[in-house]
Image (tube, rainbow, N blue to C red; front, side, top):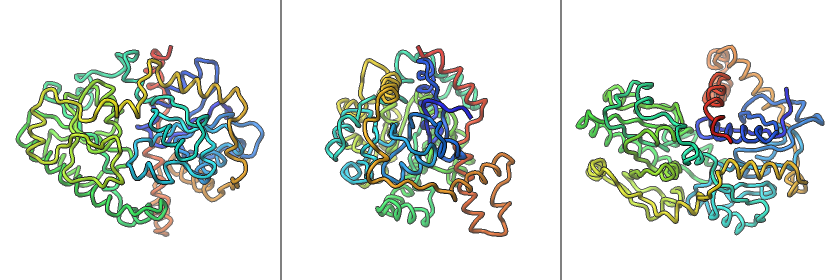
Amino acid sequence: MQTPDFLILYEHTVREYESDLLLKLELERRGYTAQIRQLLDPKHLGWVFGKTKPKVLVASCMYDNEAINSHVYNNIGRCDKIVNLHWEQMLSDTQEEGDWFNMNGNAKRCVQTCWGRRTAQRLQAHGMEAKNTPVTGAVMMDFLRPEFEGYFKDKRTLCKEWGLDADKHLHLYISSFGYASMSDAEVAELSRMAGTDFTGFAHTNRVSMAETLRWFDDYLAAHPEVELVYRRHPSEWKCKELDELAARRPNFHVIFADSVKQWIVAADSISIWMSTAIAEVYMAGKSCHILRPVPIEHEYDPVIYKDAHYVTSYEEFCAAMEDPAPAFPIEREVIEGYFDPSPVPAYQRMADLLEQVLREPPRDTPMGEGFTPHFNALKYVALAGVHFLYRHHWEPKTVFAFCPPLADFAQRIYGYVDKAWVTPEQVQAMTERIRPFVK
């Protein structure tokens, strides 16, 4: 296996892979080598215990010592050049003040990239040094810049691919109901791990989802001229409620493929619940409606949504859909405080940072005092086993049917691996699509 200068780790394919690939191509254009791997990919022992390993680890998240151990040490062994792409920056007021999202332990010594000045200021207020909180902008927003004009498919092309009527009004709903698809046991386990009780928020997810789907059911019945695409969040699983609505209303479509930016660009109108993709709507020069059938607990609601305009009833939703040019529901200074509007694309600013980290001595010592590395041999074996099954299309629920607890555990990992898998053909197609814009 080739040892790259930069190892980029991703978690959610749809959320991250396109941006990671853009960054990889820019690094390669500058003469460096880079490789993208998924967090659950099999581990390479030569990197962990050998002398030859990637020089810079580019992470998707990095909150505490355990994350450093899991994402860095268990992938490439000891390394003090750790840069976090920091995909979760749109937080609630409670999360902004809590410990977890402000980095714990030696994670404060990693380079935590910030999309805007407000995040950098928050991290510094919670003990991080300015050298470790650089403002780079958000790479995923670059695809919506004028330099990338022509990158996305137009509405007619996209509709043809998915069997939608391009002559109808295309409405996009960007969902964030990740907790609605979790069982009570999964919510309890997540609450235990995070030290926060998510039971109430999970209930809000389920009620909000049920009521929103009721609005869509009624609206689509009365408006056959509308095609509604329901865009699931990466952490949201398919469920029977969505399947039942799609079976009942032929103009309701649950589509997870293509990036959310692609659908934003093609859509005639957009609605949203609490997704940070609202910033991408803004960067695309479009507007949207924030659908809130019931209030969201402030401790979970992203601060970017504070004082925004909400649609809270079915009647308001119908009226909003009739508005051909709605005002953006969030103030400009709020959006741009979290998403830095620099004239230089974020992927170039991020590549500048990575290049600097590579060439210079480590800025800090993430694996220094306070960090105790430990190699997770069980995880190494489990991932190797699950990937072996995945390559042969053998599902654990069948292979390990004799031991239900093992089958359930392995099947869950198998599901995550399947959800994050990107085929070589898909990578090649994305590369060919992005490369002309990397200059």
